Image (cartoon, rainbow, N blue to C red; front, side, top):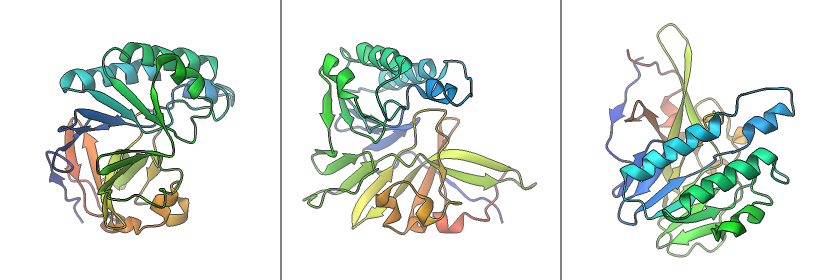
Length: 255
């Protein structure tokens, strides 16, 4: 069976995918998540040595995204850092460098993720807006996704979340597997739902068309029919809308 896709310009009206982030054009807002700064230092504790190259790549990519659009505000949907406990030296240095670079360019909102313990010690030095358990702006709720949504979400029409690090795995005609980070689009209790991928290149993510429901990290995703979600892959600056997850288990990439 051939791998069928649709090339698309944006994910929803007024919401554009820009690299691994979302650009909400009418509000001038860029949304990213799961930077996991300090991942190399965390891996070193387990004997895995990597050069400290992830943060410079993320910083350069983010500045390019900001430069390409009229960005007034940046929303980071959690997990700026990696350690669950106190920030490592690498985290202190790199998170502060990022915030110091951005603080005079735009307004920054951080929604707390499960890795963001002790993050206030850093954010308070830069007067960053910190939100928990979520951040509601007009008819949209921004949440990390490691916890359920609040009971009363009122007139919310859209939910944008992270945490899962979604990816999709596809095979070529020879049976080789390829894994691509992806956005997920669907509905949650009658509201639009968008799940954004991890910004960190080291966070490869959950293969949504291979994982069972109980293997998903987010209780929000565990509570819905995952197979009805639509993955959208970003590859070589193009967007590919794939079939719903329920159709992807045996699909092959078209050459």
